[in-house]
Length: 461
Image 1 (cartoon, rainbow, N blue to C red):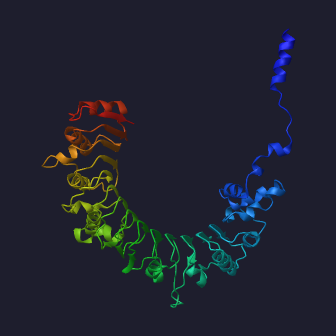
Image 2: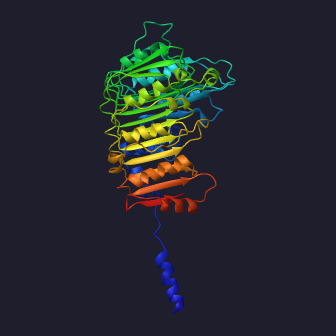
Image 3: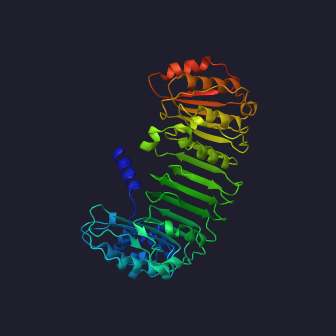
């Protein structure tokens, strides 16, 4: 009886044999769906599917996307040969996305005409998005920034253009150069070679541009003026490193998102930013030897810092970080109301507690406050000082407070005491401890502070 039961179980677990056609259901999907699946793969992996069966052999040639990178290509075959071969085998009239990233090494054979050919082929196929990255290593024997073909600079099908690395738009030797990008909405210019001669002209050729990202270093000559006058611009990302003596003029009344990181030059915003939703400002002021020896109010950038803050007073979400910007101890925020501000992220150090206080006094609707302790500016401890008047508006709106890097210093304790004493709708306080104090002792201290809110939850980590 037991044997019969065992045989019965064995029979139940047996599966009927299936032929290959039944197992390969994915190949029965339409070409459009299979091409969509392949479009999520790098081109190298998409091509590899051609060995699966005759059904897959040429499917990759119908994918309207190319993603080619020297880091993923077999070095025994030249990258130029592979890109040219792939482009010649493609069977599409329209190329939606073309990403090309390659590094010229010292041993590489560099034929600069290849790039022109590839870009012109992409333009002839009405490419919509181009992501081009070119790099030479430090040992390259024939370092030469790659020029974009003149005719490609009038590619009317482009919606997204991202350029990065050793790429040169040679306006200096060809003053008749012109740009036409009537459909371009997203433009990224990252560490390009000597872009300043044609920067403003390039932007003026993009009548519907909505997003601009610019990153650069050592490309800012003293006194040079960058102008970003784009009425349709909604998102602006600027990163400038090792570049202090420049002027940046912005006229973008439709701007909704503004991100700045780097050394603070002279930034002027011409139109009021009534539509501004989010601003992230991370100032890394270059401290030259001259500045270190002659620290004085007139040499500092405090006017620039507070002027920029004033320009952002309509923002809803603000992140403002300082790195070594000691000169802020000389200035104060203009008495402007940040009436729309609901979330503030602030990096506090010994020199800028008063800046945080100014912001809190002028942000009556602030709900979320995130403060991070910094170790910049250790020579002058201005400390937290309770405002002369209670922050009544703040106390009726602030719901969440996070403080990172708590060490139990007098300024930190004074700040936390003040907030807990006045914030009557505060629901959550998160403290991240740094230094010798244990989490338990910090939590015990906090529990002894007077609290206005009866529903506040403490978290110490």
